[in-house]
Structure formats: C-alpha cells, structure tokens
Image 1 (tube, helix red, strand yellow):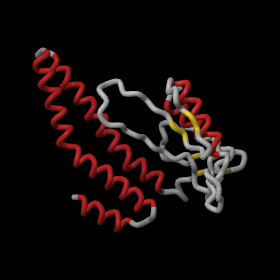
Image 2 (cartoon, rainbow, N blue to C red):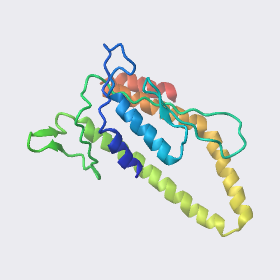
Image 3 (spheres, rainbow, N blue to C red):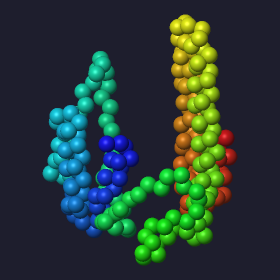
Image 4 (tube, rainbow, N blue to C red):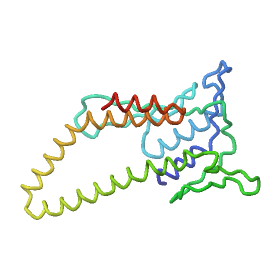
Length: 203
C-alpha cells in the first residue's frame, strides 16, 4: 500500500475530539484508528506494537547499527471538534488547474475560486517553487553523470563536497522552512503585514 493509499485510509476514521469530555481519549472512537495502527505495525514486523487502555499506541524498532541514542517519533490521532470527522470520503485531485472543485455535484457543493481566491494563490506560489526544485534535481543528475566519467576518486570527492554543502545549508534551510510556515499561517489569517514583517526579520 502506497503512502497516499494509507493516508486516504486513515482519514476515513472518525477521530473527532471532545473538549468537554473527561475521558482519555476524549472520544472512544479514536481507539478504532489506534487499534488499526497497532495492527498495521505488527503486520510490518514491529512485534511489541500495542495500544494501551488510554488509546496510546507504542512500538519499538530495533537499531540496525551500533546503538547510541534512542529516537522517538510522536504523533496525535485526534482531530478538531469543530468539524465532524464522520463519513469523510477523501479524494485526490491530480493536476489541479486552479478552477472550481466540485465536491458533490448532486448537492451542489463546490469549492469555488471566487469565494476561495487563495486557491489560485497557492498555485501561483507553489508552481514556481516546484519548477525550481525539478530543475535543481535534473541539474544534479546532469552534473553527476559528468563526474562519474572521471572515476571513483572524483565521485567520492563530489559526494564529500555535497555532504559539506548540505551541512552548511542546514541553518538556512531550517530558517526558510520556519518562515514559510509563518507566512502561510499569517496569509491564511489575512494578516499580510505580519507575514511581510516575518520575511524582513528572517532576511
């Protein structure tokens, strides 16, 4: 099962939370997804995968190298109580052309660009970024093909150079990802000036 198929499977589970609840988890239906995840983990070979009485799912993957530090990955399963999580029928829209999205033709439910102008903004901002990444990847492949022709020593030197470059770029990449999230949140909240201030500060 692909990552996309797994995601579509997971979102079909109703895990809506309830802030007025005194139980843990706040809604018992969250345990349905929890048990499903635990079963999947066991099927993958994670032998100690299990769900406890509180709905927490645990699992350990042994190291395949000399053990140094233990790394933990944590994620939540509940969704906001403001929107129902029942009967979600997610679908993937490929090659989106920035036009209206018909969600239910019979009921006339449409996400139209006129009322959601940010859809076109997403395409306008996302496409140049995607194109840049594609060109960068193809350029790396092109350069690598030439480096390979000079033998293993040059290939090793090129790899070392790339590793060094990646290490040097880590702070810049981290900052860019942080400001991208910041700008996205403030654009969605209709606070463009705050978004601009964040960009100026990050520069």
